[in-house]
Image (cartoon, rainbow, N blue to C red; front, side, top):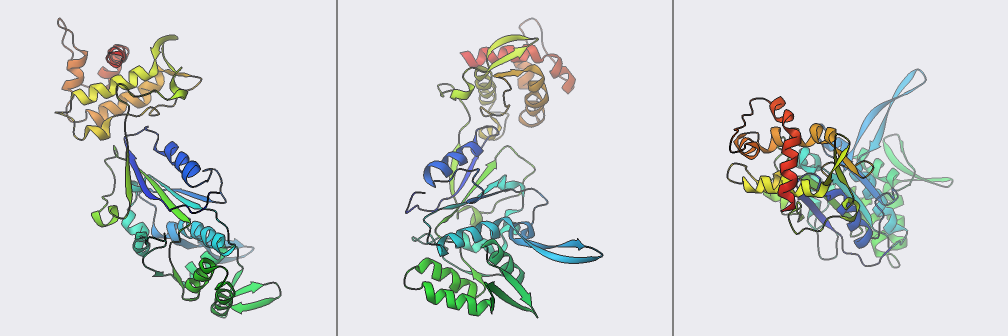
Length: 360
């Protein structure tokens, strides 16, 4: 793992299919030294309307044992990655750790982060500017995520170490003092735990994605936004290099190749851009290279019908179908689209024109 890595706290945003998740993989690998599939250094989650603070930090859930029901605390995604990062510091490792949040704006981010929101402010050394208190159960979950062995005895959290048990506060004070001279970061972790507080350390990065075309999303307030770096992932336009993996992909209609699929992607985006007067926020409505994932180096018309055509009808041109009608009309024949089925009937002709537009 690379040493002296500056933590990254960034939101990647852009149109659907632009490769935001793939770009996170590249950042993780190239800048943090972490393969994204390495579950010992990465925790990944997806926000959605039912995702809560309890999912993020941890929650009690019933567990049946024989004829009885007990409640077990399950650490949330943030507590899990925080525990990994803390343990890395205690062990004196130079490793970096990563929390990945896909679809950040599909959940109520302010409510999900709760008091952790304060920790997003970072100092020049990479640690959070502030500390926040955590509950007793969250502390237990964090200790478990650190591979320690907490037990609750008569209302007191104890740490089991070999054949001895110590109250959590005493255990943390002992470890803090032991590491004070040789491992200041590890000592700082135990100082926080002793006070039942947390702080985001310098070896923990957070990367998130936002699909800007989603309209049924939660609002992100300016206070939340300013605590992140932002990177716009552009949609494909003319003169954009086609990704190597997409270079040989073709559109197939009725079993016959209709040319490079990349031309059709560029044509769709040109059509959207040329109608910017009637489409709100065209940057969000364009499609990326991976809006439709090819199979066996081809995209067939059925995939186009199921995903692309409905997206154009229901999202891009939802308010005004006239641009599509004008695009499909000929000098001697005007097209009128009354229902979605009318649009599907003209799908082969629409795609032919889109391909020509992309090749210009």
